[in-house]
Image (cartoon, rainbow, N blue to C red; front, side, top):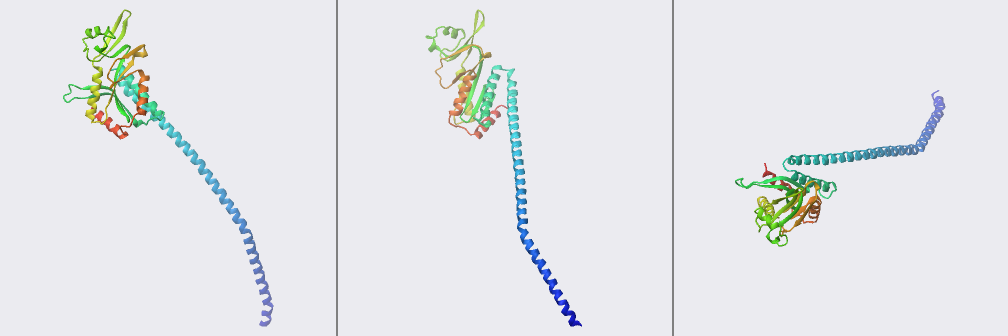
Length: 304
């Protein structure tokens, strides 16, 4: 009985095993056949996902950079506007005391702002100081400096004059033969005929002419420059400048008879701009930005 059962069940077992084997082989064939398709779909999906991420990041980066640039532009505009306003407000403090000094200060500030805006210099390459005082030991000979311009190519001291009319600058007795009429003004004003003087002739009324003079203006400007240089212990000379700023841009003329080439004479904002455009950009560097900061601090410490 058992023997017969084993005989009948053995073929069934073989058939079942064969079927299972066929199914396994079919599954393996199907799996390996479609595995390539699955991998291809997975690669396509991963590639599409990567492209989407990269596009998003690229777009986001462009937006971020654009926003950053916009913020930077606004910050720069805000800084420039507030700096100019602060400078103007600072200058306005001088207006009630001396309109001429205020206008000169404003001209210098506008010149610097234009140079910085045009990227010809940096903000730190130029300092403009006004109404600086050089105290003496006993404070009996304190000197006032109208304007100081600190640049990397030199330091300039400006004696600013606000005037209208016609100027004879740097005249003395050596000019009497050429200009005989001015000797009487020297006598009338009791001026030193050997010392260079500056005379200004202006129409007072329809039938009168006013004559003003700046006694020893050349020498005083030179002395102030040298004294400040000694106090600050600077290696290079401070360049003295006499700047005539015409009142209300009216009619004027100037004749420069001075033999002193150590003092520059400038008239009007055009000459002022041209001078600094020439010497600031074509001069040899004398100071670093750090030097200018230290010199400015030292000057301000003299004026607590």
